[in-house]
Length: 184
Image (cartoon, rainbow, N blue to C red; front, top):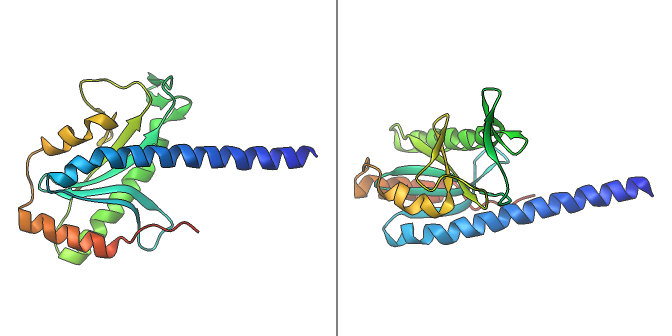
């Protein structure tokens, strides 16, 4: 009976975490619609070839290629420095950033291989719920941690690094190379 309770409790917790994450992804997707209207290609929930990983949101436009990871944290989640590290609740930030960096490296390598040119990928963690500075992003080892509501302006105000033709080519390659993710 005790083992049964533990199994169901863990299963229920995993399901709740998945639902919360999915809700964050949907909320970010709604925020990114305005980028599509501005001419950016926005791909959601894309599989990374040769891995079990997926990219929550892949954005390609004149200001670059972006891998966006969505997080839905409780509004009382604290983001604080301690012991020379930044912590999100009881989790060191590097554990949150590491998978996003892996996704970006994979996207960069695949696009470089397909186009024959170096493609830098910018990483962003879009946060819903937790209190973050209103004025901008927290830079965590090259990854921007910011309120999801700031994504559009943050992306569109960056310096253009691609022509329309280059951005279109990268978007076409990305749509073909990173299929919709189907969990197994």
